[in-house]
Length: 173
Image 1 (cartoon, rainbow, N blue to C red):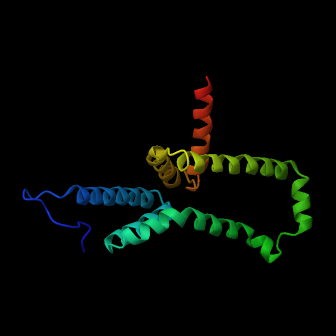
Image 2: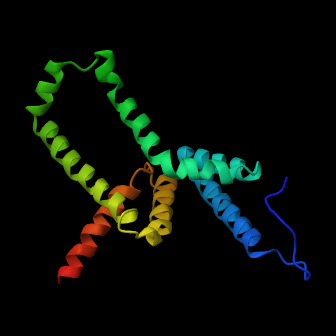
Image 3: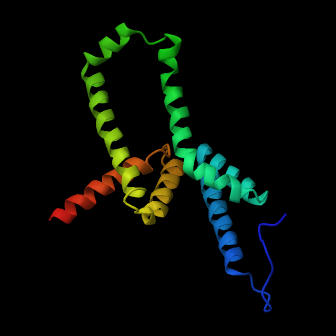
């Protein structure tokens, strides 16, 4: 089954690539354990998928695809799920009109503008501006919140957006 690839050196120690591979496997296993204990099914399923791909040794082919397109396709599916009531006709133009006349509907609209903007800032902060070093903290926070606080782990982009704005504010002081 081989999570360990390649050979051992003359002392019987794993080469650095192999130890990094084992280390990453243990990290994903730890995420899986925390997710299972906290009943964070989406996190557990994602960690399980990555572990299976690693154990099948197809990670070098599949991980780049998941890493590059996963966010896009995940958002497409998420938005499609949210739009289903509109597509089915269970939410009508009249319903939409009533929503925008209530304070709750207007608040939802304004908060949606803010959080969507923040998510965009977070994605740019992590990718374009190259601050991926904060990802472990974002991931750990999302996993713990999903596992033990009943959260849904879609917050890293919003969190990194808040972080990006905080960094900009502090830099101006």
